[in-house]
Structure formats: structure tokens, C-alpha cells
Length: 386
Image (cartoon, rainbow, N blue to C red):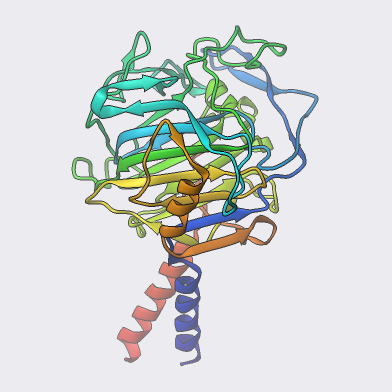
């Protein structure tokens, strides 16, 4: 009985810690720290492929750091993207009136085949033993390779495990430590990401239930996601077999906006920060223990706002309108009307657990994993003694 009581208490604790919200806020985002950039990539297409991180560190500080650097935008299926936009504002503080309006600097609209300051990429380049698949232009279906920048067709659906990337249309200079994009894999299509301390990413999209593939065919079955990476990561290696081939493990930054974490919670979209602020385990990161509901049958609208004071606000709202200019009052209104708010100050957010970190694919235990253990044990004992 004592175990049963404890099991029920554990289940209740997990449920209480993981409830549905309309808004997830990370306050106090940004800190002073360092990471190491990739300094050298050697023997890319031989078994001797290696990478070296810089002997010196890259310093960062301030609101949202290191996520105030250029970011790339990543999508994993099952997902259909209808609209995407990136905005900047001179100054914006969440919830305050009198702050600046937002200007759209990148835009994709599937229905009109519009792509402004947007480049679609994917991991369909040549394979390397230490770097993994290279970055190439995505074809119009999102999953094939193209010879030049191509606009994604309307209605294109990524299946489970399939991915593409959006970056700006500003190409990098040649690879080099003193160049604008630093060292990168030279056969990659190399572009700048989306800059700014105060920036916003909005999306109109669907995350339908996987109906083509089976669990046996793909590891990330029915686990869609939209996330952000430091733009250096895809330019060198998004999924390296050698951690020295990416700045990710040294803390250059990842922000998971909407991510299904495992196959037992496919209707829950979690948000996670992956850097070293408040944690020594970047793989786990810092996850808010609440989720936004995934609508697998309809269209969702929302995104993330990084404000000037170091608050990242993830929200879903049908009121979201992806216009060329958006007033501060409209943003605040959409967030206010989105529903219940979960606010976490980053220094006090519990260390998260992710079954699959978007950037490195490392498998680790999750909160839902322990929930499943408790529920299974309770069910077994109930069957035996109930």
C-alpha cells in the first residue's frame, strides 16, 4: 500500500509538473559565458576525418545570449509549413506598452510562393564519417536536393524524421577564421542566419498525425518539431559523430520552440533551452515543465518572441497575423489572449530531460519516462493485488 500511495503521488507530481498552457515564458534568458568555435576541419571524406575546436573562446553576454547571435530555423515532420516570418524591433519588452513595433525582415508564404530573404536547405549533401550529411539546397518538396535556391511548394508535408532548414538569403564569404561566417564545411551551401537580440519568429503550420510511415521505419515517429540553432552549427555539422565538429557541445545555443519529446506524449509540444545557463548538462537543457497542445487536425499559429529584457515568450494564438509590420500592442494582445501562462525564471527552471535533443540525437531519459515506469508499476501491482 505504501508503494501504491507513493506511485500515485509520483503520477500526480508528474501530471502537475506537465500541464497544458497557452504561453510559456522563460525569464532571465541570457548570461555571460563562452563557447568554442570550430577552428579546423580535415580529411572530410576519408576515415581520418577530424575537427578541431579553437584554442581561444568566443565570449557572449547580455539579454538572450548566446541566442542573441544569428540563428537558423529547423523543421521536423510530420509538418506542413504555410507561413514563416522573422521580425526585429529596436526595443520591445513583453507586456509593456510604449515599446517599439516589429518589422518583418524575412517571409515565406506557401500559397503565393513568396520567399523573401529565405533560403530552404536540408541535409541531403554528401556524407562524411565525422560531419554527417552535408547541407544542400532543398528541392521544392523539401526533402530532395536542388542545384540552386528553390521555393518550397504549397502543401509540402515532411514525414516523421524528415527535416529542412530555413536561413537568410545572405551567403557567407569563403570559409576562414577571420571571415564573416568563420570556419565551415566548404561543400555546404553556407548562409547567414537571423540576427538580433530583440527578434521574433512566427509560424503558420500543421502537425498532422503520421499516416505514411510506421514506428518500425523511423526513430522519431510522429514527433514533429520547430527549433532554432546557432547558425554556425548547420554550417559545420548538425549531427556530427565528433563533438569537435560543432560549437553545440560547448554551448553556442539551441532553443526548441515546439517539440514533441517522445512517442508517449505526441499531443504535447515542449520548449527547451540548450546552453549552460543554470545547468552543466547541455543535452538535457532547461525545459519548462508545461506544454502547448498540438492540434493534429487543424492549423496552428504562433511562435517565439525574444524581448529586449531577456524574456523568451513561446505562444500559440489563432489571432496571430503574419503581417509586414506588427504593433507592440498586437503582440501583447495575442499573447494575453493565448491562454494560461507558465513563467519560469531561467535560474530556477529544473533540469529537463529530452528523449532526443534536436541537434545531436543523444538519447536520455525523460520525465515522461519516469511517469511511464510509475504507471506501469502501479498497473502491475493493481492487477496482482487489486
